[in-house]
Image 1 (cartoon, helix red, strand yellow):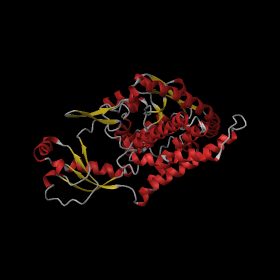
Image 2: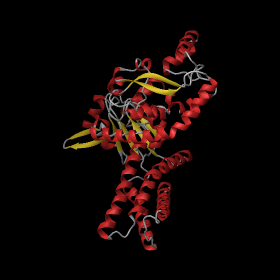
Image 3: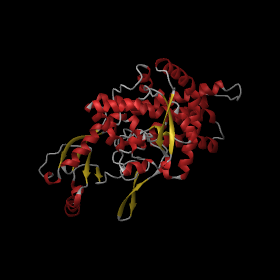
Image 4: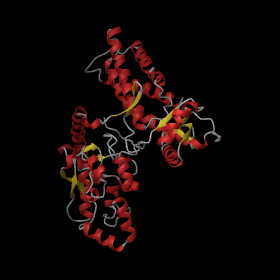
Length: 435
């Protein structure tokens, strides 16, 4: 009810805003906005939450943020497109296409944002989620339960678990669904001989295969007659998607670079005042197809930072251990006091990288380009996957904990869920997706 009411309010607001914008343009593009046209458009737009409900978007448990974003945006665009087509074919163009297009643009931007805020509110109030039981071997069962608990936005709350050997004697509570972990030949024999999955007293059963080394995002189920198939979409290997993504990078990167110039100049002046020396810092990184390029940043560290780092690591075992874990230092004494910390905290030092985006070295979104010493610590499969796409200014690692996740966490998050190659083990926490 909260989600539907909020969507309805957003859509009504989008129509009202679109009407106001269209009235402002009336001087150049005259149009008569009558009560009949306004009510017709408003009624048609207000039906979209009903369409969402029919598509089971309310509440939509079991969907990652990426899936919710894609489905809601696609259906919103289809609905507004259908309204324009209906008006053209059945009403001879009685509705203003300008109002519909403006309202569609507002809805596409605001609806997903509202959905995320609403879910956070519901989670904090304890009003979000449905009960789930997890069945399978203890080690895998606990891993699945930990994942669900760490991602409450999925809405599947584990309330109990059991092994298959204890299923007959276990006292399992009522739940909306059961998550069944397929593990080894023992459980396969159970399904064949005792129809264990069919005997479960739950209206919905979700099978979790033992495929942690495969991607979990952009996977579709395919009915192959007597066989079950899982299709893994590797979106950024499609030529059309590469072209679209590069065009977006060029357009948005150019605009962002122009807008960032004043802030870059102010930040550069502060760096010079506090720490005389070069304003920009360049470092060699690995990009698409393993090509090396120079990444540009505002200097936030003292001069001779590499020498100072070696001295600190040699003196402090604690710093050495932290560096080996994350390739970063939480309290790095090399950072320029005051100014450097602020620039790094708000990522202002990264703004010159919009030039790398325009040049084609980087993308706006993608795995972060790492220094050579950091790349040397990655697994061969991770390094191979990263070379298939352009590195980005921001990516899943940055929005999911940054260096706090450690080297292993970084590889789990940045191992390209977009490509789906071996090694993409944990993408349930993905906040971004590229199509």
